[in-house]
Length: 439
Image 1 (cartoon, rainbow, N blue to C red):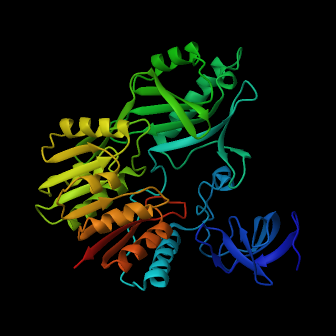
Image 2: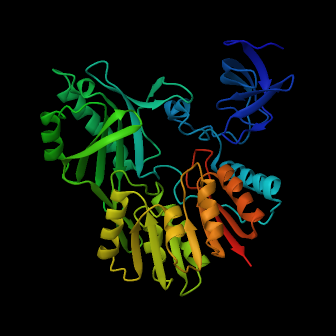
Image 3: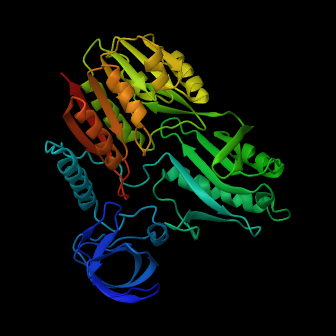
């Protein structure tokens, strides 16, 4: 069958793809359908098409799965694709993520001993950070998420993945923006295309970051009203040369850092630094990392960011060396070891690969928590050549994780421990912790 855009079909989903789409086939041609579950029959419409696969949307479901969540209130969130699994009951979400990890490790590494996934302590209102897209063509701004694979804005009436406190404040701030935007559309003049909000669950601090393409000053009426109403909010303006090229960040209100808490630890995090979005689950993950470290080990905390992992495990190890290339993250890390009175942790502002080549440090283990695209092959080789026999790898992308693990295994390491975590409920993403050893 030759498919066309806007063609209407009747299909039955065979399974969920790893991205959370219902996967159907017509003459063995794959069609990925939003919000469709395995064994559900539906009328669909083709929205995107290429020579290898198509994407489609549901028009009508004829036969629903017993695993479908029938109590969805926020249909706009589902429509945006930012919560791809919210139509699936939570127990089934966990089974899906477990199966993705199990099948990847079996197929790519012939490894079967995967531990049971750790559920998230909260399945809604768990995120401490969110970035929302802005449409400022009119004085009353529109805000929400871009629909997957497009720049079509899906407006949101509630951000149910973030904390209830942050959700409420976002809409209060949007109202203040709109009130100050009535006479002069300063949001459009400033070319603000995105706003990031962060909320510390334990300290209750809020950080707001404008992402703009203009050097123009942010509206003073807006800033005055925010200052008067919210003492706990800091505001940063990140100015870009283009949408993905940061030129500079400037403080508009209060300071550049926000403080998070992990158990008894207080961690200062710069506005551009990485920090885990699910604070309660992070405690579970970091506790398991700590359990994998033998007492009195010398540990390299690679790509350490603000040194949250290094500081968390410091009282178990004899010495931690945290290596981070980002200057601002390193600055936050140095502040963190002082305010938490950590005496056995050294912060080094350098590229990890260069650090391992230049310095003759002796480490018992490496902890690494890379971004979703995983480790560069040069970094993997630097780890292998360092002859460090123990690697603790935390990953937010099982697919790039198994790709990297194959290289380590080919060079004499073996997998001893794999544990998945649900760090991102209502989405198809899973976190994994792996212990590698070399005899």
